[in-house]
Amino acid sequence: MGGLAAGTVEPTEHDYALWEKRVDALMMLLSHKDRRLVSTDELRRNIESLGAEAYDSMTYYERWIHAITQTLIQRGVITVDELGRKIETIRVREAQRD
Amino acid sequence: MIEPTVARFHTGDTVTVREAYPIGHVRTPFYIRGKRGVIERLCGAFANPEELAYARPGLPAQPLYRVRFLQRDVWPDYAGQPGDVVEVEIYQHWLEPEEPQR
Image (cartoon, each protein chain N blue to C red):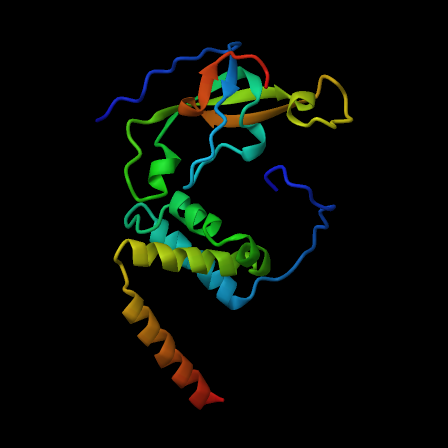
């Protein structure tokens, strides 16, 4: 990528997980012209800001949800505090389910 | 309505891509910076993605060109046909009038 040395590209097929479809749907809804809460270029900027190590270790939609979340915080749509509390609530809920 | 920036290049003009490495979201690929190519066409004018990336309007819209480069000018070890080309879409503010190949 970007002119850097790389090996051969080996295309593979895979089914999308439910969470991956949800991330895609989330991006479509947030970037819709009626909302414009995330632009494609903001998404790309936040993916590029990951750093090489994180970029290489994350999957495609992991990068997307990271970048969507960053954009929503940067825009003030959500706060870090709200995000942290919500994740904790879900963590507790899922732990009780197990 | 903010009028788009006036297009300064025409099909057939030789241009050099600016060799700059700012932080931020830049759509000009690293591998093409500093290279010399020829304007293939004007694609239109679009809001500047470097500004859109920071939730700003990116206006006035910037002319976007499809620029044609010889592969052998882009890749020092290019082993394909000498006439092979790569076309890259580049915004006007990344292009300068012809300069000697670096």
